Image 1 (cartoon, rainbow, N blue to C red):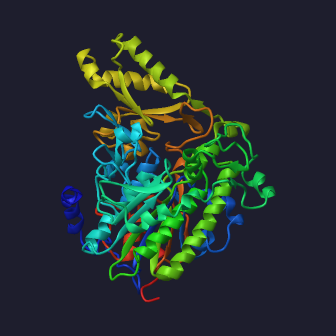
Image 2 (image 1 turned 45 degrees about the horizontal axis):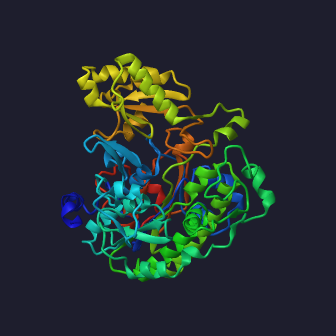
Image 3 (image 1 turned 180 degrees about the horizontal axis):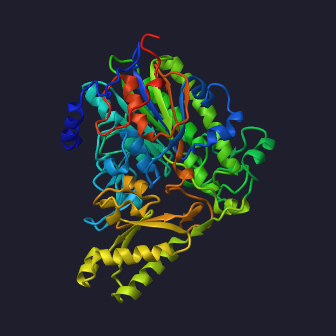
Length: 563
């Protein structure tokens, strides 16, 4: 089924010139046989300099010293979330092109919210005895909503399907999106039972090495243990903050301060592993099995491996970027990277792989922490905000029946008005949108409101974040209005923890590093976009760049041919 579904899309990739390097010859004496996309979810761009004094040689420091390091890399769009970030890294385009505008959005035709990699037609493999209600509604992993080919698809097309594609993550969307349309293997973590799973979209049974890994019980190795600091406790307060700050969350009954216990109840335990740096260690163990079992980098054609380490994200959401937990997780991430690079050197061969390392988004500081620094900050209660929005519309345009609402849905920073209701009441859509935009601009914590019409007309009178919002906008998927929060304000109904999803620098600034193959040591200061990741990997492997990718990596990141 998936072969027929994607045949047209694959033809687009195949039609792109195999030299697809925008006039640049790949400057490599020996072309690597393995390309790797490494993503650390929510690894903010400032973390590397902030905590590098506690990194060890061989991890981030190795990439800083021996690879190409883009220090000023920012997402150019407003909707800085996991789905959009992974799609941009994989395709070399923005949400306005690849269509993954968020993790979830409202589908007017279906009359419900949809998940970026979900479809009820597909179910988990291995099958669960009981599916959660959200799984029944959203379905299991599928790349069907991604609208353009990515680096994995380009590799498949360039190698006549001989190159292997393996995509692994703790999150489903972080495995599905980089894996492209027809990966050989795509797996993610199931926190309900501690297994790695796939979906019926891809296969009817897990591959042998995943079955054996699940049976090994590796996900249970942290039971009866606690998460403690990796380095001396005295190093943490000055470079992060107090261990128990206002606004920090409790995690999965893990507590606000070190040491953090793992839950004794099985389901709670697996969720706690995911919500700790040890989730990343579990994924690394699976990645090693994949590299050895699939003999990645050992064939006549190049292969592609995507590894998205998700645990940095829930840790950041729970305790915030100025916490000792995030500092500790980042230091442990450095050690994990060192382990991975050493493994690649030994089993794939130094110089026989090329990698791009990045993140899918940053994160906002805890509002409570920002306030202690004299920064205006706060939490916007979404339930209250939505109720007041509906009340304002009712007062302006007239009461409706209890079941009818002027606001049909909200998704992230987007508002979807009820078009059918507006038509029945003979209210011009533009009038309702303009009224709501004017209302929104007066609300506490709201910095700017941009309408769909302003984006479609390229109306730069909106100024501010108009360009960033336009790059997050996709017709038919996006809402009628986009609300931009003030810096250091976060929307949500929770009283602890933090989030991301804005166009502000703390959400857009992420690392971008290239290493291996014929990448040379260089540090670049100019502002760039993560859209470069896919072209870097394509050039490094000597394959076609994904056809919609328009960013060209600077020639200075490559050593001269023959050197």
